[in-house]
Length: 426
Image (tube, rainbow, N blue to C red):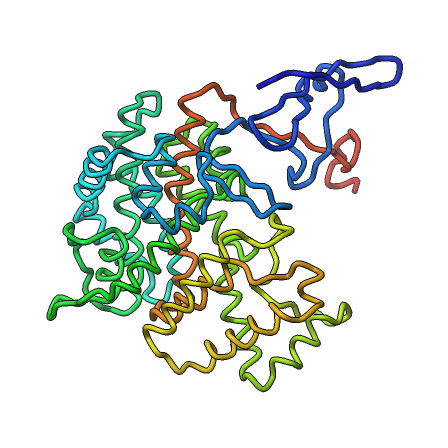
C-alpha cells in the first residue's frame, strides 16, 4: 500500500489522516485516530467504509468487473471448474495439475458426514425451511469435528476448510431428501463436485442415477459464479464473528443466517415468486408497465444490481448456460417461457437500457435451478453451498493476518442520563 494523507479540520484542531492506495480500486482514508479526537464517522450500512484489507476478490461495479485473485470471473467460468476456483480463492494461485489432483482427492476424502449427524436431522420438522436446517447442522459441525478448532493452528484452519467445502453438498442434499421423506444418499467420490451433488439430490438407493453432463456443467458454473463476492453482508458477518475467535463452523453458520435474508441470498427465489405473480406471457407487458410506474409498488426482481451499475459480469455467463439448459431439457414450462419473454423485453426496451436494468445472475440462476428440478426453497441453500469457499477464504485470511475484534460505534439518539423513579412514584 502506498501512503498519502488528507487533512480534517475539527474545530481548532487539524488531523492528518493517512490515505492508502491498493493495487486497484478507490483510495481509503484511515480514520482510526478520530477516536482519540472524541468523534466517530457515521456510515449506515458501512457502504463507504473499508473494514479490512483483502487480497481475494475485487469488484468495480461501475465497469462491471469481478476478479478473483486477479482473474476475471468470465475466464474462470469458461475455462475452470469449481474446485479449481476453490483452490485459487484459498491459496491465491491457480493449482498445477498435481496440486489440483491432490486437492480434489483431499476434498473427496471429506465428503461424508459423521453418521450421528444424520440423526440430527430428525429433530427438525419435516416442513422446516432448508435454510433453517442448514443454520443448525453447519453450526453443529463443531460438535462433531472438534479436532480442528484451534484457529491459531494453520493446519487446523486448512482441515476445517476442507471439511466445510466437502461436506456442504452432502448436508444440502440431505436437507432436500429429509423434506421429501426419502433416504439420504451417500456421496460417490468418483464423480465431480457438481455431479456428486446432483446425484445426492435426485438419486435413490434402489436404482442408478445417470447425471446429465449439461446439467452438471450448469451447476458447476452456478457454484463458480457464487463462490465469492467481496465484502458483502454474509462475508462481513463471517469476518465479524471470526474476529471474536469463534470456531470456523460457527462463523459459517452465521454467514448462512445472514445469507438467508431476502435482500441478500433470496434474490433468485424472489425471481421465481415474481414470475408466479405475473402468471402468463400475456401479462408481461402489463407488469413491465407497472415496473416503470414509480408510484406502483411492483418491482421486477432479478434486474439490475446494487453493486453493478453496468452489466453484471456473471450474468453473461449465466445467460448462455441458461439457454443451454433449456435447450437440452426442452422443457415447456409456462414460467420459463415467461422468463424468456421478460428477458427479451428488458434487453431491448430503452427504459431498462437507460437505467442499466439488465437481467442479473439471480435472474438466470433461478431459471436454471427451476429447470433442473430444484425447488425454490433450496435456492438459497445452493447459494450458501457455493459461497462457503469465499467465506472460508476470507475467514482464513483474517485469522492468519493481524486483526482485532469488530466493534462498530453508534450515533446515540436515546434519552440522556436520568435518575430511576421508584414504581410507586411513576
